Length: 150
Image (cartoon, rainbow, N blue to C red):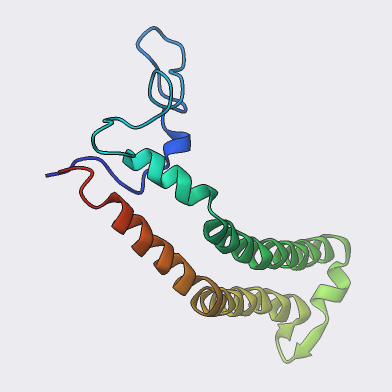
């Protein structure tokens, strides 16, 4: 039974962990990088670092960033516009729209609606633009690491 996690980020291992003397431990295994056992070839960490440096992985990350960064910025601008308008123009926000419903209530409900729409757009983008490539990478990585821990 293997206790190590193959999806653990090898680059982040050791960050924030103390070495017993009160100072931070160096990241990564001690000694020069290389295969843990020359008879086995590459270690799992070497394979995952190789995959992380691959063009396919970088393309998945680029696709992720191309959606998430603009969507996050747009939502933050919309949220801050709502908050700033509520603070600086209370008369505008108190203006009735229909009966007891005012502009502030409509804008507040619009925040919730935007959140749900953005979540749906993110899920659709992931399904259409990233999931297949990420699953292919995962399959290739599992094929490369097959037999390392045996």
